[in-house]
Length: 430
Image (cartoon, rainbow, N blue to C red):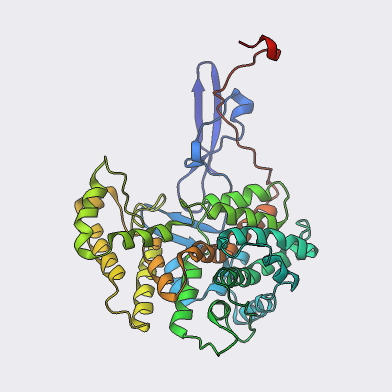
Protein backbone atom coordinates (compact mmCIF):
# COMPACT_ATOMS: atom_id res chain seq x y z
CA UNK A 1 0.00 0.00 0.00
CA UNK A 2 1.30 3.50 -0.82
CA UNK A 3 0.59 6.77 0.98
CA UNK A 4 -0.72 8.31 -2.23
CA UNK A 5 -4.34 8.29 -3.27
CA UNK A 6 -6.31 9.12 -6.38
CA UNK A 7 -8.90 11.87 -6.07
CA UNK A 8 -12.26 11.30 -7.73
CA UNK A 9 -14.52 14.27 -8.43
CA UNK A 10 -17.83 14.26 -10.28
CA UNK A 11 -20.23 17.18 -9.88
CA UNK A 12 -20.58 17.50 -6.12
CA UNK A 13 -19.35 13.98 -5.39
CA UNK A 14 -15.79 13.51 -4.18
CA UNK A 15 -13.79 10.57 -2.95
CA UNK A 16 -10.20 9.70 -2.13
CA UNK A 17 -9.30 6.32 -3.56
CA UNK A 18 -6.21 4.58 -2.15
CA UNK A 19 -3.48 3.52 -4.58
CA UNK A 20 -2.06 0.07 -3.95
CA UNK A 21 1.23 -1.38 -5.16
CA UNK A 22 2.07 -5.00 -5.85
CA UNK A 23 5.55 -6.56 -5.78
CA UNK A 24 5.91 -5.83 -9.49
CA UNK A 25 3.50 -4.55 -12.11
CA UNK A 26 1.23 -1.53 -12.35
CA UNK A 27 -0.36 0.08 -9.31
CA UNK A 28 -4.10 -0.17 -8.83
CA UNK A 29 -6.72 2.25 -7.59
CA UNK A 30 -8.80 0.72 -4.81
CA UNK A 31 -12.47 1.45 -5.58
CA UNK A 32 -14.03 -0.76 -2.90
CA UNK A 33 -15.45 2.27 -1.07
CA UNK A 34 -16.46 4.22 -4.20
CA UNK A 35 -20.16 3.30 -4.06
CA UNK A 36 -20.37 3.94 -0.33
CA UNK A 37 -18.74 7.37 -0.69
CA UNK A 38 -20.33 8.52 -3.95
CA UNK A 39 -23.22 6.23 -4.88
CA UNK A 40 -21.40 5.36 -8.13
CA UNK A 41 -20.08 2.09 -9.56
CA UNK A 42 -17.30 1.66 -12.11
CA UNK A 43 -18.12 0.29 -15.59
CA UNK A 44 -15.58 -2.17 -17.00
CA UNK A 45 -16.99 -4.81 -19.41
CA UNK A 46 -14.76 -7.88 -19.43
CA UNK A 47 -12.99 -6.56 -16.30
CA UNK A 48 -9.91 -5.83 -18.43
CA UNK A 49 -9.03 -2.81 -16.28
CA UNK A 50 -10.07 -4.30 -12.96
CA UNK A 51 -7.97 -6.31 -10.50
CA UNK A 52 -10.49 -8.83 -9.14
CA UNK A 53 -8.25 -10.16 -6.39
CA UNK A 54 -4.88 -10.02 -4.71
CA UNK A 55 -2.68 -12.99 -5.62
CA UNK A 56 0.85 -14.28 -5.05
CA UNK A 57 0.75 -17.07 -7.64
CA UNK A 58 1.33 -15.88 -11.22
CA UNK A 59 2.53 -12.63 -12.78
CA UNK A 60 2.33 -11.68 -16.44
CA UNK A 61 4.04 -8.71 -18.09
CA UNK A 62 2.41 -8.77 -21.49
CA UNK A 63 4.37 -5.84 -22.89
CA UNK A 64 7.70 -7.55 -22.28
CA UNK A 65 6.63 -11.16 -22.80
CA UNK A 66 7.21 -12.31 -19.20
CA UNK A 67 5.36 -15.10 -17.35
CA UNK A 68 6.37 -15.88 -13.76
CA UNK A 69 5.05 -18.56 -11.41
CA UNK A 70 5.86 -17.58 -7.80
CA UNK A 71 8.72 -15.48 -9.24
CA UNK A 72 10.21 -18.19 -11.48
CA UNK A 73 10.16 -17.69 -15.25
CA UNK A 74 8.17 -20.16 -17.32
CA UNK A 75 11.26 -20.74 -19.47
CA UNK A 76 13.27 -22.16 -16.58
CA UNK A 77 10.39 -24.14 -15.11
CA UNK A 78 9.63 -25.85 -18.43
CA UNK A 79 13.24 -26.43 -19.45
CA UNK A 80 14.81 -27.41 -16.12
CA UNK A 81 11.94 -28.81 -14.07
CA UNK A 82 8.89 -30.96 -14.63
CA UNK A 83 5.14 -30.58 -14.31
CA UNK A 84 4.71 -31.99 -10.79
CA UNK A 85 7.50 -29.72 -9.55
CA UNK A 86 5.58 -26.79 -11.07
CA UNK A 87 2.42 -28.09 -9.38
CA UNK A 88 4.14 -28.10 -5.99
CA UNK A 89 5.43 -24.57 -6.60
CA UNK A 90 1.98 -23.24 -7.54
CA UNK A 91 0.30 -24.92 -4.57
CA UNK A 92 2.84 -24.23 -1.83
CA UNK A 93 4.76 -21.17 -2.99
CA UNK A 94 8.28 -22.64 -3.13
CA UNK A 95 10.11 -25.23 -5.20
CA UNK A 96 10.25 -28.52 -3.31
CA UNK A 97 13.33 -30.03 -1.73
CA UNK A 98 14.28 -33.49 -2.98
CA UNK A 99 12.41 -35.10 -0.07
CA UNK A 100 9.35 -32.85 -0.50
CA UNK A 101 9.20 -33.62 -4.21
CA UNK A 102 9.50 -37.36 -3.62
CA UNK A 103 6.65 -37.22 -1.10
CA UNK A 104 4.47 -35.06 -3.36
CA UNK A 105 5.01 -37.30 -6.40
CA UNK A 106 4.21 -40.34 -4.25
CA UNK A 107 0.94 -38.85 -2.99
CA UNK A 108 -0.20 -37.70 -6.45
CA UNK A 109 0.70 -41.07 -7.99
CA UNK A 110 -1.30 -42.97 -5.36
CA UNK A 111 -4.40 -40.90 -6.10
CA UNK A 112 -4.52 -41.48 -9.88
CA UNK A 113 -7.15 -44.24 -9.81
CA UNK A 114 -10.80 -43.19 -9.87
CA UNK A 115 -13.68 -44.91 -8.13
CA UNK A 116 -14.59 -48.08 -10.02
CA UNK A 117 -18.23 -46.99 -10.27
CA UNK A 118 -17.13 -44.13 -12.51
CA UNK A 119 -16.62 -46.71 -15.26
CA UNK A 120 -20.36 -47.24 -15.33
CA UNK A 121 -20.92 -43.50 -15.20
CA UNK A 122 -19.30 -43.23 -18.64
CA UNK A 123 -21.75 -45.64 -20.22
CA UNK A 124 -24.48 -43.03 -19.88
CA UNK A 125 -22.86 -40.91 -22.60
CA UNK A 126 -23.34 -41.38 -26.31
CA UNK A 127 -20.29 -42.75 -28.06
CA UNK A 128 -20.03 -39.62 -30.19
CA UNK A 129 -20.19 -37.25 -27.21
CA UNK A 130 -17.53 -34.53 -27.28
CA UNK A 131 -14.78 -35.34 -24.77
CA UNK A 132 -15.16 -31.90 -23.16
CA UNK A 133 -18.84 -32.59 -22.49
CA UNK A 134 -17.79 -35.80 -20.78
CA UNK A 135 -15.12 -33.93 -18.78
CA UNK A 136 -17.56 -31.31 -17.47
CA UNK A 137 -19.93 -34.03 -16.27
CA UNK A 138 -17.32 -36.35 -14.78
CA UNK A 139 -15.36 -33.68 -12.93
CA UNK A 140 -18.56 -32.32 -11.42
CA UNK A 141 -19.53 -35.86 -10.44
CA UNK A 142 -16.33 -36.35 -8.43
CA UNK A 143 -17.99 -34.66 -5.45
CA UNK A 144 -20.50 -37.53 -5.41
CA UNK A 145 -17.69 -40.09 -5.26
CA UNK A 146 -15.29 -38.23 -2.93
CA UNK A 147 -17.58 -36.39 -0.52
CA UNK A 148 -15.01 -36.90 2.25
CA UNK A 149 -12.97 -34.01 0.81
CA UNK A 150 -15.62 -31.37 0.10
CA UNK A 151 -15.50 -29.46 3.42
CA UNK A 152 -13.69 -26.32 2.34
CA UNK A 153 -13.29 -25.16 5.96
CA UNK A 154 -11.05 -28.15 6.74
CA UNK A 155 -7.40 -27.59 5.62
CA UNK A 156 -6.78 -31.33 5.45
CA UNK A 157 -9.78 -31.89 3.18
CA UNK A 158 -8.69 -28.98 0.98
CA UNK A 159 -5.26 -30.60 0.62
CA UNK A 160 -6.73 -34.02 -0.18
CA UNK A 161 -9.13 -32.51 -2.73
CA UNK A 162 -6.23 -30.66 -4.37
CA UNK A 163 -4.15 -33.83 -4.70
CA UNK A 164 -7.13 -35.78 -5.98
CA UNK A 165 -7.91 -33.26 -8.68
CA UNK A 166 -4.30 -33.10 -9.96
CA UNK A 167 -3.99 -36.89 -9.86
CA UNK A 168 -7.37 -37.92 -11.26
CA UNK A 169 -7.80 -35.37 -14.04
CA UNK A 170 -5.42 -37.22 -16.43
CA UNK A 171 -7.21 -40.50 -15.69
CA UNK A 172 -10.61 -38.97 -16.43
CA UNK A 173 -9.24 -37.31 -19.59
CA UNK A 174 -7.77 -40.60 -20.82
CA UNK A 175 -11.06 -42.38 -20.08
CA UNK A 176 -12.93 -39.70 -22.07
CA UNK A 177 -10.53 -40.27 -24.97
CA UNK A 178 -10.82 -44.05 -24.85
CA UNK A 179 -14.61 -43.86 -24.66
CA UNK A 180 -14.61 -41.43 -27.60
CA UNK A 181 -12.66 -43.85 -29.84
CA UNK A 182 -14.35 -47.02 -28.57
CA UNK A 183 -11.38 -48.62 -26.82
CA UNK A 184 -11.28 -50.14 -23.31
CA UNK A 185 -10.14 -48.03 -20.39
CA UNK A 186 -6.51 -48.41 -19.34
CA UNK A 187 -5.75 -48.19 -15.62
CA UNK A 188 -2.98 -45.90 -14.33
CA UNK A 189 0.39 -47.34 -13.40
CA UNK A 190 2.34 -46.27 -10.33
CA UNK A 191 5.72 -47.05 -11.92
CA UNK A 192 5.32 -44.29 -14.53
CA UNK A 193 5.72 -40.55 -14.08
CA UNK A 194 2.85 -38.12 -14.64
CA UNK A 195 3.23 -37.54 -18.39
CA UNK A 196 4.27 -41.13 -19.13
CA UNK A 197 1.25 -42.44 -17.26
CA UNK A 198 -1.08 -40.17 -19.20
CA UNK A 199 0.30 -41.25 -22.58
CA UNK A 200 0.08 -44.89 -21.47
CA UNK A 201 -3.57 -44.52 -20.43
CA UNK A 202 -4.38 -42.84 -23.76
CA UNK A 203 -2.51 -45.04 -26.22
CA UNK A 204 -1.97 -48.46 -24.63
CA UNK A 205 -4.28 -51.33 -25.56
CA UNK A 206 -4.72 -54.66 -23.71
CA UNK A 207 -3.57 -56.81 -26.64
CA UNK A 208 0.04 -55.59 -26.82
CA UNK A 209 2.64 -53.75 -24.71
CA UNK A 210 3.00 -49.99 -25.10
CA UNK A 211 6.52 -48.58 -25.13
CA UNK A 212 6.91 -45.11 -23.62
CA UNK A 213 8.93 -42.79 -25.86
CA UNK A 214 10.90 -40.47 -23.53
CA UNK A 215 11.00 -37.63 -26.09
CA UNK A 216 7.21 -37.68 -26.46
CA UNK A 217 6.71 -38.00 -22.70
CA UNK A 218 8.99 -35.01 -22.13
CA UNK A 219 7.03 -33.03 -24.71
CA UNK A 220 3.78 -33.91 -22.98
CA UNK A 221 5.23 -32.82 -19.64
CA UNK A 222 6.32 -29.48 -21.12
CA UNK A 223 2.88 -28.89 -22.60
CA UNK A 224 1.38 -29.46 -19.15
CA UNK A 225 3.89 -27.09 -17.54
CA UNK A 226 3.36 -24.34 -20.12
CA UNK A 227 -0.39 -24.38 -19.50
CA UNK A 228 -0.35 -24.85 -15.72
CA UNK A 229 -1.54 -21.35 -14.81
CA UNK A 230 -2.04 -18.02 -16.51
CA UNK A 231 -3.20 -15.55 -13.89
CA UNK A 232 -6.84 -14.33 -13.82
CA UNK A 233 -8.04 -15.61 -17.19
CA UNK A 234 -11.69 -16.44 -17.91
CA UNK A 235 -11.68 -20.01 -16.56
CA UNK A 236 -9.61 -19.14 -13.48
CA UNK A 237 -11.91 -16.22 -12.72
CA UNK A 238 -14.83 -18.63 -13.14
CA UNK A 239 -13.30 -21.03 -10.62
CA UNK A 240 -12.72 -18.18 -8.15
CA UNK A 241 -16.24 -16.83 -8.62
CA UNK A 242 -17.78 -20.26 -8.11
CA UNK A 243 -15.55 -20.87 -5.12
CA UNK A 244 -16.48 -17.57 -3.53
CA UNK A 245 -19.97 -18.95 -2.91
CA UNK A 246 -18.52 -21.80 -0.85
CA UNK A 247 -19.06 -24.43 -3.55
CA UNK A 248 -16.99 -27.60 -3.19
CA UNK A 249 -13.70 -27.76 -5.13
CA UNK A 250 -14.87 -30.40 -7.61
CA UNK A 251 -17.85 -28.24 -8.61
CA UNK A 252 -15.55 -25.22 -8.96
CA UNK A 253 -13.13 -27.06 -11.24
CA UNK A 254 -16.05 -28.38 -13.32
CA UNK A 255 -17.09 -24.74 -13.80
CA UNK A 256 -13.56 -23.95 -14.95
CA UNK A 257 -13.63 -26.84 -17.43
CA UNK A 258 -16.95 -25.58 -18.82
CA UNK A 259 -15.53 -22.08 -19.29
CA UNK A 260 -12.35 -23.41 -20.88
CA UNK A 261 -14.46 -25.21 -23.48
CA UNK A 262 -15.24 -21.88 -25.14
CA UNK A 263 -13.40 -21.45 -28.47
CA UNK A 264 -12.17 -17.99 -27.47
CA UNK A 265 -10.33 -19.53 -24.51
CA UNK A 266 -9.29 -23.18 -24.55
CA UNK A 267 -10.06 -23.91 -28.19
CA UNK A 268 -7.41 -21.59 -29.62
CA UNK A 269 -4.87 -24.32 -30.47
CA UNK A 270 -7.54 -26.31 -32.29
CA UNK A 271 -8.50 -23.18 -34.24
CA UNK A 272 -4.83 -22.57 -35.13
CA UNK A 273 -4.43 -26.12 -36.45
CA UNK A 274 -7.64 -25.83 -38.46
CA UNK A 275 -6.34 -22.60 -39.99
CA UNK A 276 -3.05 -24.26 -41.02
CA UNK A 277 -5.04 -27.09 -42.60
CA UNK A 278 -7.21 -24.56 -44.44
CA UNK A 279 -4.13 -22.84 -45.87
CA UNK A 280 -2.77 -26.25 -46.82
CA UNK A 281 0.52 -25.41 -48.52
CA UNK A 282 3.11 -22.65 -48.18
CA UNK A 283 2.46 -21.28 -51.68
CA UNK A 284 -1.06 -20.26 -50.57
CA UNK A 285 0.19 -18.18 -47.63
CA UNK A 286 0.31 -14.82 -49.53
CA UNK A 287 -3.39 -15.20 -50.34
CA UNK A 288 -4.29 -15.66 -46.66
CA UNK A 289 -1.92 -12.92 -45.50
CA UNK A 290 -3.68 -10.53 -47.86
CA UNK A 291 -7.04 -11.62 -46.47
CA UNK A 292 -5.80 -11.11 -42.91
CA UNK A 293 -4.79 -7.54 -43.76
CA UNK A 294 -8.12 -6.80 -45.48
CA UNK A 295 -10.42 -5.12 -42.97
CA UNK A 296 -13.45 -6.20 -44.98
CA UNK A 297 -12.51 -9.89 -44.92
CA UNK A 298 -13.68 -11.84 -41.83
CA UNK A 299 -10.67 -14.21 -42.05
CA UNK A 300 -8.36 -14.08 -39.02
CA UNK A 301 -4.94 -15.63 -38.52
CA UNK A 302 -5.38 -17.92 -35.52
CA UNK A 303 -2.44 -18.51 -33.19
CA UNK A 304 -1.08 -14.99 -33.57
CA UNK A 305 -1.27 -12.26 -30.97
CA UNK A 306 -2.63 -12.56 -27.46
CA UNK A 307 -5.02 -10.54 -25.36
CA UNK A 308 -2.35 -10.13 -22.68
CA UNK A 309 1.00 -10.53 -24.45
CA UNK A 310 1.93 -7.55 -26.61
CA UNK A 311 5.29 -9.15 -27.27
CA UNK A 312 6.42 -12.67 -28.17
CA UNK A 313 4.54 -15.19 -26.01
CA UNK A 314 7.32 -16.64 -23.78
CA UNK A 315 5.63 -20.05 -23.86
CA UNK A 316 5.76 -20.09 -27.68
CA UNK A 317 9.59 -20.21 -27.71
CA UNK A 318 9.62 -23.43 -25.68
CA UNK A 319 6.68 -24.85 -27.59
CA UNK A 320 8.41 -24.24 -30.92
CA UNK A 321 11.49 -26.15 -29.73
CA UNK A 322 9.32 -28.96 -28.36
CA UNK A 323 7.38 -29.15 -31.62
CA UNK A 324 10.60 -29.67 -33.61
CA UNK A 325 11.83 -32.32 -31.16
CA UNK A 326 8.60 -34.29 -31.52
CA UNK A 327 8.51 -34.07 -35.30
CA UNK A 328 12.19 -35.08 -35.56
CA UNK A 329 11.67 -38.01 -33.18
CA UNK A 330 8.72 -39.24 -35.21
CA UNK A 331 10.58 -38.78 -38.49
CA UNK A 332 8.26 -36.07 -39.77
CA UNK A 333 10.64 -34.21 -42.05
CA UNK A 334 8.31 -32.76 -44.66
CA UNK A 335 5.13 -32.02 -42.77
CA UNK A 336 3.18 -29.49 -44.86
CA UNK A 337 1.55 -28.06 -41.74
CA UNK A 338 4.96 -27.38 -40.20
CA UNK A 339 6.16 -25.82 -43.45
CA UNK A 340 3.15 -23.50 -43.43
CA UNK A 341 3.67 -22.75 -39.73
CA UNK A 342 7.37 -21.89 -40.17
CA UNK A 343 6.70 -19.59 -43.10
CA UNK A 344 3.85 -17.88 -41.25
CA UNK A 345 6.13 -17.37 -38.26
CA UNK A 346 8.86 -15.89 -40.46
CA UNK A 347 6.39 -13.46 -42.02
CA UNK A 348 4.91 -12.50 -38.66
CA UNK A 349 8.36 -11.65 -37.28
CA UNK A 350 9.50 -9.62 -40.34
CA UNK A 351 6.38 -8.13 -41.96
CA UNK A 352 5.85 -4.54 -40.79
CA UNK A 353 2.08 -5.05 -40.60
CA UNK A 354 2.46 -7.80 -38.02
CA UNK A 355 5.23 -5.94 -36.18
CA UNK A 356 3.14 -2.77 -35.89
CA UNK A 357 0.14 -4.71 -34.62
CA UNK A 358 2.37 -6.94 -32.44
CA UNK A 359 0.84 -10.12 -33.86
CA UNK A 360 3.48 -12.54 -32.67
CA UNK A 361 3.01 -16.34 -32.72
CA UNK A 362 1.55 -17.56 -29.41
CA UNK A 363 1.71 -20.93 -27.64
CA UNK A 364 -1.39 -22.21 -29.43
CA UNK A 365 0.34 -21.80 -32.77
CA UNK A 366 2.77 -24.65 -32.05
CA UNK A 367 0.88 -26.75 -29.51
CA UNK A 368 -1.79 -27.76 -32.03
CA UNK A 369 0.82 -29.23 -34.40
CA UNK A 370 2.60 -30.96 -31.52
CA UNK A 371 -0.55 -32.55 -30.11
CA UNK A 372 -1.55 -33.75 -33.56
CA UNK A 373 1.88 -35.33 -33.99
CA UNK A 374 1.52 -37.03 -30.59
CA UNK A 375 -1.61 -38.72 -31.94
CA UNK A 376 -4.42 -36.73 -30.32
CA UNK A 377 -7.51 -35.75 -32.36
CA UNK A 378 -8.49 -32.10 -32.27
CA UNK A 379 -11.47 -32.90 -30.03
CA UNK A 380 -8.96 -33.74 -27.27
CA UNK A 381 -6.91 -30.54 -27.45
CA UNK A 382 -9.01 -28.58 -24.96
CA UNK A 383 -9.22 -31.63 -22.70
CA UNK A 384 -5.41 -31.66 -22.46
CA UNK A 385 -5.51 -27.94 -21.66
CA UNK A 386 -7.93 -28.71 -18.81
CA UNK A 387 -5.62 -31.42 -17.43
CA UNK A 388 -2.71 -28.98 -17.38
CA UNK A 389 -4.67 -26.03 -15.98
CA UNK A 390 -6.21 -28.00 -13.10
CA UNK A 391 -3.32 -27.19 -10.77
CA UNK A 392 -3.62 -23.48 -11.56
CA UNK A 393 -7.33 -23.55 -10.84
CA UNK A 394 -6.77 -25.46 -7.59
CA UNK A 395 -3.96 -23.13 -6.46
CA UNK A 396 -6.07 -20.03 -7.20
CA UNK A 397 -9.12 -21.57 -5.50
CA UNK A 398 -7.05 -22.54 -2.44
CA UNK A 399 -5.53 -19.05 -2.21
CA UNK A 400 -8.98 -17.46 -2.36
CA UNK A 401 -10.48 -19.77 0.26
CA UNK A 402 -7.60 -19.03 2.65
CA UNK A 403 -7.83 -15.25 2.13
CA UNK A 404 -9.55 -13.70 5.20
CA UNK A 405 -10.72 -10.78 3.02
CA UNK A 406 -12.47 -13.12 0.57
CA UNK A 407 -16.09 -12.23 -0.21
CA UNK A 408 -18.67 -13.75 -2.50
CA UNK A 409 -18.28 -12.40 -6.02
CA UNK A 410 -21.05 -10.00 -6.97
CA UNK A 411 -20.31 -7.81 -10.05
CA UNK A 412 -22.53 -4.79 -10.63
CA UNK A 413 -24.17 -3.66 -13.86
CA UNK A 414 -25.18 -0.61 -15.84
CA UNK A 415 -28.89 -1.21 -16.29
CA UNK A 416 -30.31 0.05 -19.63
CA UNK A 417 -33.68 -1.76 -19.65
CA UNK A 418 -37.18 -0.41 -19.08
CA UNK A 419 -37.80 1.73 -15.96
CA UNK A 420 -40.42 0.63 -13.44
CA UNK A 421 -43.88 0.37 -14.99
CA UNK A 422 -47.32 -0.84 -14.01
CA UNK A 423 -48.69 -4.29 -14.76
CA UNK A 424 -51.73 -4.33 -17.09
CA UNK A 425 -54.23 -7.20 -17.28
CA UNK A 426 -53.87 -9.18 -20.48
CA UNK A 427 -57.26 -8.04 -21.83
CA UNK A 428 -56.16 -4.37 -21.56
CA UNK A 429 -52.92 -4.75 -23.48
CA UNK A 430 -53.11 -3.34 -27.00
